[in-house]
Image (tube, rainbow over all chains, first blue to last red; front, side):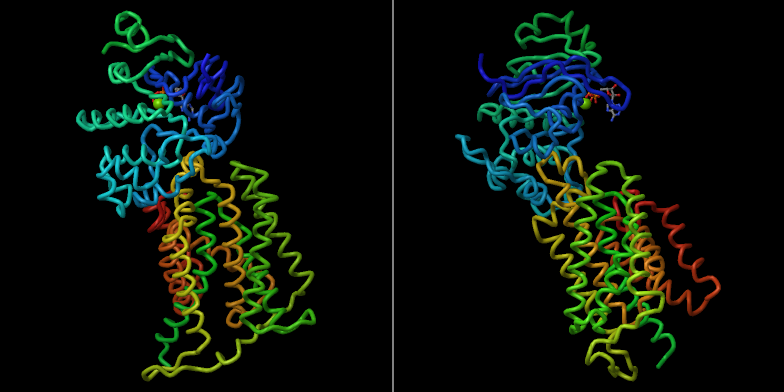
Length: 240
Length: 290
Ligand SMILES: Nc1ncnc2c1ncn2[C@@H]1O[C@H](COP(=O)(O)OP(=O)(O)OP(=O)(O)O)[C@@H](O)[C@H]1O
Ligand SMILES: [Mg+2]
């Protein structure tokens, strides 16, 4: 079996006393895209937080390219090539666009075989950010903030990219732009987890699908199979 | 010399001194989310250490400015040690961290009393600045003008550091969103040490610079700490501009309050703080509610 880029094995996670993830296991294959679906509150963001080290798994293991990272800090997991585009974007609002990118800069790993991300290549991908380079990030539109959040993640030259609802709150046309970007990133060989509530967005780009339901893995499948199974989708995601 | 003019110059001078003290306090508050209750002690310690060197108390004597730099560096190192070996042991537990800083402030007060005794220590004004400058029709004490100039230079240096360097952007990112700062790979705990040491050094520098006008005495720490807190609540935690404006404001309120309403000096001083807390809890220039 190919190496997995990111793996959760039997993960249990809590916020205080509330048991949010129960025995969650899934894996993201190298250079693949995993769509992570689930209703509001199903535990998708919690999985991302555990993968990034923002929330420590109480039981179970997390590994990145075979190396255990369970309970490492976010900065150490970032140093191992994982980057997060968080839900709600969470760009540094009082920093300029350029500063948001600079502070996240990290040299690519020695073994990496494609051109590193720099401010210039990020600006090449998002020309609109380039026009706003000296502007405070707080003053960007929602779509621009999402581009900045993606650009900031890329500045870490990650091997694994975690994207938590990047389409949330964006106009349809901007969603299409963001999805086109995600497709390009996938083609560049990046291993990606894409969290979404809307399965149709994910089915077009993902290789594998995991559906969470109330903190556990309910379905592991592929877009092709799930497209045929409306009943299953309705059961776990509601009506679309 | 005109009474109002004197009062104004004194206010700006005191504001400048407060800025040296409070800018570090504010950065620490913004980044680590704790009021560093040792800040008054660090100010006092800087004044005692620097003052001792200036008057040659421990057998060696130095020029005022060298003494100030040496005191600032010593206390900055002490600040780094406090952060690394005490506060770092209590990550995320802000209440415990605040209590640690409170404990250290009491210990520092005892230590100073033991070493320097209960009598005030007067620090001589640096050479060449004991006189007055005549500007227009008015006469200004040179040393007070020097304090204002120093505060402006430090403000510009801090602004350059925070606004024009990658380190500064990282610090601001940490103030904005510490979790995201860590997610993008910034070692926020290292920033804590750097900012704590910087704040400690600045506080100590303020202490010795203020020595010739305030003198140094037991209790100086507890006189200064509330003023730093005031500046940060009014200006906003983590904001350099907020510290600057807040310091000058507090400098004016403090001096005018004492001159015009001496019985109500504290009332006048803390009323604006209550108003800011009620009406704009993040401070005039801050983004976070402390
Ligand atoms: N910081 C927190 N403290 C306590 N409970 C939390 C916290 N964050 C999330 N939860 C709870 O954990 C559960 C899972 O939340 P999570 O954010 O992972 O869901 P999600 O699948 O990302 O949902 P959404 O689609 O709304 O983003 C929910 O019941 C939520 O209420
Ligand atoms: Mg979520």
